[in-house]
Length: 287
Image (tube, rainbow, N blue to C red; front, side, top):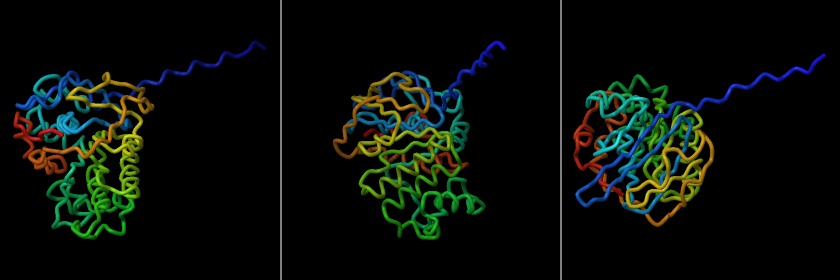
């Protein structure tokens, strides 16, 4: 009998990007900020954004999280052109598609751990106790679900913030210096949690000085003087590709405290007080 020719295997089609940024720019009066960044991020990517203090890392995350509006360039999140959205539509897209872990974490001191996680769902968060407790258990905090936020250690608070960012299973998780000031054990727990989010299909981006955090990511991109030293996509989806050296040269002085008041908008369905920053304020001033 003639040999049977094996059937051709269909080519793998890359998943559609959840972040598509082209020539993205944001400038402060000092001319610091971000200058023409191109970035393409797909589901399951885990990317470290490194660079010295003042290079634009926090500004980039604020733009991708729709806390700030770009001065120029284009940004598509989950397939939608952000510039074409109304403020209410941007808030809805952020609440549905983006989870953010800010440097100050933004935990509410009058709530316990599970309530802080469930707050991602908005004012009626008590309906989501089961999801919140389940997410905390996945991050090794099941026994502390009822603990007041004020009684948690730094590493535990970081994991609660990550649980809140991930509980709604957003397409994108952005984390600003998630391992800063943590010891090795807590840093490992935090990175494991972010890795689990990426393995679950989220696109995870970390702004970091920490070589441990950068090493946990499949892609490493570097910002220098507001310029991203890479093309829009440096690796095949989910594939390791070195995109820049790590320079752990000190803590990233995050001057974006006035962007932090968008945390409720980031984590709640109907909060809209990120609008001022989205409409051209100087919130989120860069580290």
